[in-house]
Image (cartoon, rainbow over the protein chains, first blue to last red):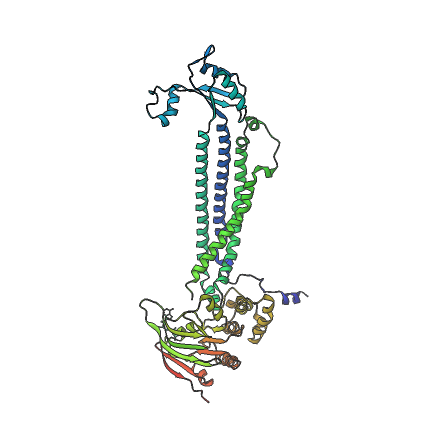
Length: 316
Length: 226
Ligand SMILES: Nc1ncnc2c1ncn2[C@@H]1O[C@H](COP(=O)(O)OP(=O)(O)O)[C@@H](O)[C@H]1O
Ligand SMILES: [Mg+2]
């Protein structure tokens, strides 16, 4: 019975087996480890990008939570006080404001210099008073009501949202995004180079077998497929390894970052219930870890195909 | 079938010598040719051209109706599947069993795995190696390796069979058996060209000859001996 089975099954290789002996010819552990390291770096740079975008978004909200109040003719009297004093008093009496501060003349001149030139201070323009107001929380104040109130105290007063900082932050976030993108491209290129070097080593190690198979009528596609099948598997394994290594690091970082991203101080100081472990990473990072092996596999396949086909050009 | 018109071959394109010089000859479908000449005359180089391992440097070479100088790479690959080659050094894949070595041409041409086994086993029985089908070449004797090489060369029933000094590693009895096999295949319609030093064999199996000397065709004897 056993003997008969052996008769039917034995030494018959499974379909798609290793005609060219690549299992030995390709340095599997080294290739897997190097691709894994690249995948790890790629995961960190993508995570860095996502984190900087998120932090920037929070900061922008913070910057949005400030107002500028302009009081024309600040020295003119409004009842018992100057218009400036009246506006300041009205602001201080408004709930929901974290701080109220009138800018000094020098600060004002600094702000105006870009428009009025270096002589801003000496111009005898009637400058308005400028009051910087920080809100306790974004959107924590009814802007229309505040405006109406200040108009009644000192007609002509302007309330403006501050967004210079928001613009600067947008620029910073954009730069971080470009940097992360550049890092990602470099990492991908290095991964492709690693695969190309390993493929070339495999090609020279199996040169005779390849020439024989070529001589038996194998097309470039047949030979390239043997290599890319093996390399794609190794690269996918490397990507998986990198993703597995990156997972605890990313979880640790996002655990540390969580209080800041959640916003308010109470959330930071409150001790929340143990979160479910899947909540330790935002969904986009989970997606990243899943996609990573697919991407390294793709890079492996493309690079192996291109390298082998180019090498085969030496044969007629 | 095979037609050479002033075919020359140079290995190094810059300043190397012409290894083959303006060869012109024809081998009709189903023909048999001995390829003779002293060592270094260019026999192996000519066979390399004929099994499409090189393209002519100049002249026109046509094999199985295709102009080799201008054919695409994929066209050449398809043509190679119709040409069986027996090398003096066998060129078996050392990591594959005898079975897998013989099956290789069928797998390369995309034959489904289910159709391969019966043919390969039959071929292995025919060359007397069925019992050793799972052994890899390094564990086989020279004669056994050669039989694997022959089985691989003819498994896909090629239109052309080329052999480069195939009897170099064989004793007299094995050499005779091999030649009987070649003649049998030739009788069934395969075009056969055998490069050899073995004048005894040539006398035992008289056939038209191509004789090379220093890269030139010095004699083409087409008249068949009785
Ligand atoms: N790959 C090669 N590169 C350069 N010269 C070669 C190569 N192969 C053969 N030759 C030269 O071509 C000539 C013919 O060799 P070859 O075809 O092997 O002759 P034969 O098979 O008749 O002994 C010899 O001078 C040999 O040195
Ligand atoms: Mg030779």
